Length: 220
Ligand SMILES: Cc1cc2nc3c(=O)[nH]c(=O)nc-3n(C[C@H](O)[C@H](O)[C@H](O)COP(=O)(O)O)c2cc1C
Image (cartoon, rainbow, N blue to C red; front, side):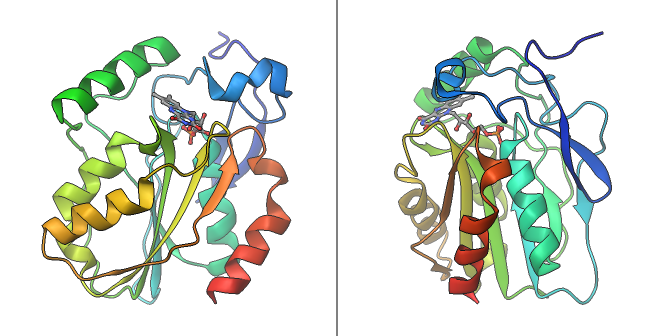
C-alpha cells in the first residue's frame, strides 16, 4: 500500500529507525510552501516507535515533534553531531495524514487554546544543561504539540539553555521564540532562550548540512 502520494524515500535514521519525509527534494512549484503535505497519519512514521534515546551521561537532550518528518531529520542530524539524547513528543490522538484535516484541527486548537493531550513519559530532565527544542512552524508559531509539552513540562526547563530548531514552509520562525519565552515565564521558569534558532525550509532539510554545522559551531 502506498501511504504517501508523493515519492517518499528513506533519507536517514534516528535512533536506528528510518525517517520518511515526503517534502524532501520537492521543487518549489510542487512543494507550495508545504501546503498540502501529507503524512502517514502517525506523527511521524507508523512503522516506528516514538524516538526515545536516553543515557545517564548526556548533558544535552533534543526534544522534538514532527508530523511529516522534516523536523525529525533535523533532529537526527543534530543528534549525530552532538551525541545529545533524544525524546520525541507524542500526542494521544495523532494528527491526520491529510493536510486539510490537520490544518482544521490545528486552527480549532489555536482558537480554543485546547492544545493536544500528550501520550509520553517524560524523564527527569535535571541531568541536562542544554535542551534543543525542535518543531515545525504552524500558523507562524510553534506546532501545538510543542506548546502542549511546554505547558505540561516547562517547569523542568528551569535554569537551562534552550536552543530551538524548526522546519517551516518558507515563511520563517514567526513568533515561536517569543512564545517559548512567554510560556516559560508564565510558569515562573528562568531559562536562557537562544535568539538564533536553526530555521530550514521543510523541503530542504536534507541539504542543510553546512547551515546546520555553522549554527552548531556558533552555539558551541
Ligand atoms: C497545520 C500546518 C500549519 C502550517 N503553517 C505554516 C506557517 O504558518 N508558516 C510556514 O512557513 N509553514 C507552515 N506550515 C508548513 C510546515 O511548517 C512545514 O511543512 C514543516 O516542514 C513541517 O515539518 P514536519 O515535516 O516536521 O512536520 C504548516 C504546516 C501545517 C501542517
